[in-house]
Image (cartoon, rainbow, N blue to C red; front, top):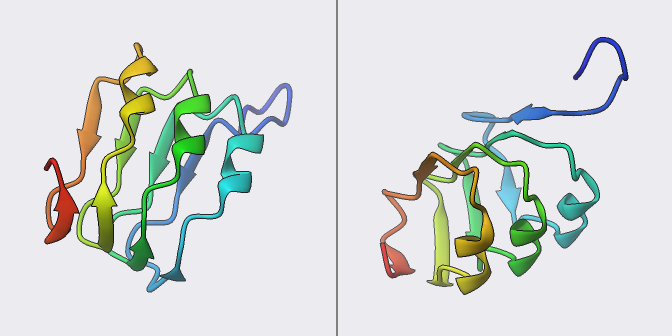
Length: 94
């Protein structure tokens, strides 16, 4: 959280045994620069809504159970320098 504006700029939930899917409402955090959901039990597809997080610099989704394809909209994330998705055996395009 930015200590001046109190806006969420980073979300690190790695290794918290999370289950279920990434909710599309995550796109309501437009100031995110860091998103780490690695090493959980998340499944389903990676939501297209992640492509709305245009300020992301680091996104780690590795070691979950994501399925389907990587959303093509993620190529719009021009600031993204770290993108980890390894360890998702049923994800296409890794």
